[in-house]
Length: 257
Image 1 (cartoon, rainbow, N blue to C red):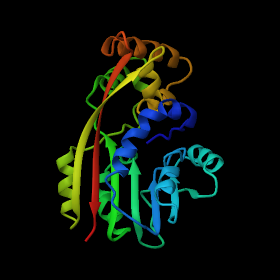
Image 2: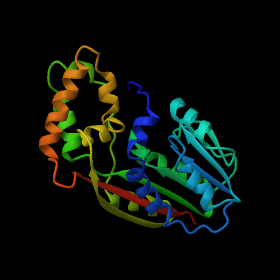
Image 3: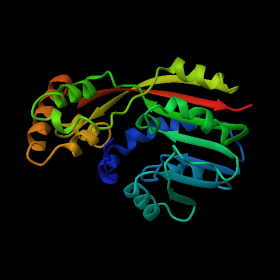
Image 4: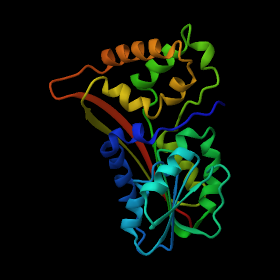
């Protein structure tokens, strides 16, 4: 699988919209005075800092596999949070974690359902394991991307590009309940009202479309981007108040026995 580089600035372009699902997720965590809190896939660290606000006496760590994201987090995060470069597929907690959060990260890990048993094992008994993943991969923003990428002259460049994916809510519920957890799973579709030129492209170029765009050589990327923008404008027409982007997200909060 080819590697892609994250751009913290592009990712933060819609920080308010990306923050809301995180707050909805963390709002279902009932921990009162946890000792150890870990954010797996912390990105630029702006949301990890909210965990330190919520539990100021806890030891809060943010882990991410992107050097660019960790560097940004370390520069901006201050002394309340420790940020480290780590791959969640290999990560092991030195001590049981009281609150383990993973926000919009697991969808980038192929076979992440198979990782759930090991992640649950890192959580202390009666601790909290909470994650959120997008559930919008059948929506036009992704369908149009993959249809266009399958055409010439682009297809030859994107054969091994990473594609995010997730499962249905019931799949996560059954997997976590099968591990002996008390489980709360739900989904929410947010209607983001975006403004500016080609806002859906700006949104997805910072996340789901980024690996595809980076895999294309300079000779064809501008042509791809212009056609992708055109198709996105057709799929998401601008209205009098902006461009509406429906975005479905899937949430799970589990408590190991």
